Amino acid sequence: MPQLEASTEIDFYSAHYQDAYSRINAIVIEGEQEAFENYQSLAVMLPDSKDQLLGLAKMESRHRKGFEACGRNLKVTPDMEFAQQFFSRLHQNFQAASAENKVVTCLLIQSLIIECFAIAAYNIYIPVADDFARKITEGVVKDEYSHLNFGEEWLKANFEAAKAELETANRQNLPLVWQMLNQVEDDAHTLGMEKDALVEDFMIQYGEALSNIGFTTRDIMRMSAYGLSAA
Ligand code: PL3
Ligand code: FE2
Ligand code: FE2
Image (tube, rainbow, N blue to C red; front, top):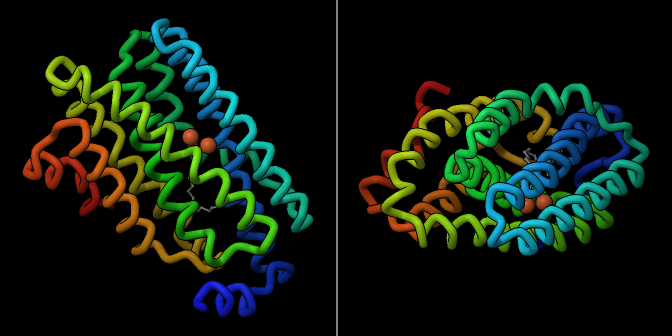
């Protein structure tokens, strides 16, 4: 019911919607492209999981193509320069960690933070998307859970050794997520997505992931809201 209501109210071809979509669509395309590259780097860092990680990378490049088609379908040109800027700090942090072979930090950035961000965004987008984008996004979000699961399983199996690095990486990277959300708040609103819902959904996904890995409720409370009040 609410789905139908939302999609009949939104004019996907208004100048206002299309302008916002040019940035949000670009963010998602860039995010999928960076995810593709990040899983390829992880495949080098974790040779035992190489085939599985290359499989995840392949899924990310399919996701990128799907979202490119969503933009074309609405006749929107994605603002890729904006999107690269949007991801630059998270991108730099991943690059720096990968150069030092810090696999725990790389997994936290890609498989926990970015995947939880994507899952929250896609779940909230689905009910307000146009029919074409909804079908694409529904397929994509299923895959994202399996990417999150890869990170959870690996970090759970290495929890004691990874714990301190996870805490540091969380402190360095989680505040960036809140800043990124602030940057897209207005455009997301134009697409029918509310910032509060995005924050809530992200915190639920991320908190559940930390719990599956082995953190206590107390740790999770502290870690999952880190930097939120300053945002
Ligand atoms: C990894 O598989 C995917 C990485 C993509 C990250 C996307 C973050 C999106 C944040 C922007 C909020 C609006 C979402 C709109 C959905 C089409
Ligand atoms: Fe993806
Ligand atoms: Fe993913």
